[in-house]
Length: 240
Ligand code: PGA
Image (tube, rainbow, N blue to C red; front, top):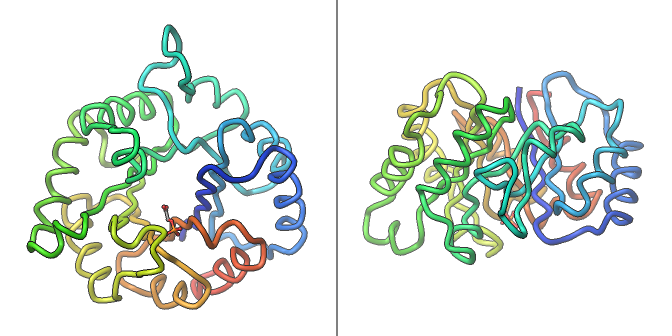
């Protein structure tokens, strides 16, 4: 089973989400060995939930608060999202870490909270270009996993996403060898988790990436914004 996850980032209003999902549902050919997930902006979550009602597609938050309710102005609650049927949440995306100064301690609290709620986190990790150039890729991945997984169940309700920071939104995709090496390493530390790859995935490279050992699916930003390209990526999955 591969996961194809569309991270819309700060794109698609409720109306745009509805229009996209209507077109996507009409053209997607169902497969029991592929799970497609959508991560709209929180303001479009309810439109997404309604558009996906009765389908096999899943959806969730791009970010959630580590608490479920209270005095946390501007935050979103995974517990409240569950009421709409949200079963997933991205955690620790590199844009959250770099632009919003999210720390490993906060990420750990978010993971703990989501697992306690029965919501599956997609925990994003990855090295910067500086880490890679200085030969610190594995050290960085290990450090993120060790500090962010304290108290976390590794056997259930945990999906990982390897996203090299230098490959996100840059058009610069990691080589198949770099992906294979990182996924092998992460899988050795988290043997039971599915590990998605993310970073400049496009219809032109998705088939080869999906065929790399220990790649359990894809987390897609830019190329998930058009129905055609997301469908092409879904169809490039030769295991479906
Ligand atoms: P990208 O984004 O596909 O646009 O590189 C991936 C991500 O940020 O999850």
